[in-house]
Image (cartoon, rainbow, N blue to C red; front, side, top):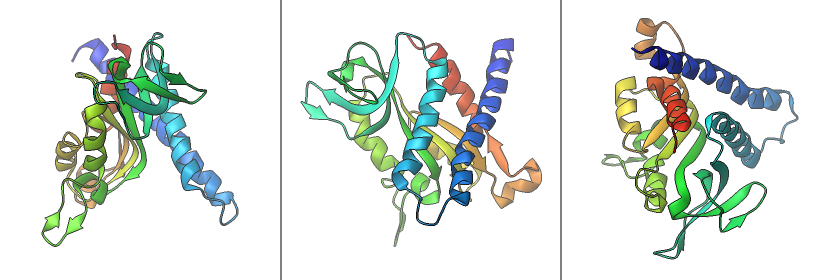
Length: 218
C-alpha cells in the first residue's frame, strides 16, 4: 500500500466517525424534544446538508453541488428530484439551494439516505422471495438514464442495517449504485465475535474511495 492510499484509508475512517457523530446529533435533539415535533422532511434535509458539506470539503473549486433536477435535451425529459448534483458550468435555473442542470454538465449525483435496511438493499419480500428490482434499485434505475457516461450515481448512507453477511451486502451495493459511501454499518450478530465491534465505519473503504474520486475530479 502506498503512503497516499494509506492516507486516504485513515482519512476515510476519521471522516466516517465525524459524519456519524453529526448524524447522531439529530437524534439527540429528537430525544429531548417534545412529542410530535419529529419531521420526515427535516429528517431528510439534515443528512443531505451534512453530506453536501462533506462533499464540498473535497470538491475542486470549478464544480458546484446542489439539490435539483437534470434536464435531458435529447429526450426533453426532467429527472426525478435528486438529493445532490455535482455539476460544472451555468445551470438552466439556479436558486439558493436548488438548480436545474443540463445532463451534459453533470459530473455525478448523490442519493442520500439516513438509514437503509434489508428491504431497501435486497428488495421487497414477495411470495416468491425478494424482488431485486424494488427498493433502492428502483430509484437507481430511474436516475441512471439522466447521467452522462462516467458520471456516477453515488449511494450515500449514514447507517446501514442488514443481517446478511458483509460480503453479500457489498456485492448488492455494487448492483444498486455506481459508487457508494457507507458511513456506518451495524455489524450482524454472526460477525460480531470475529470483529469484536458493533459498527463498521467506512465500509469497504467506500468513504476513502469517494474522497479520492472527488479530489481527482476533472
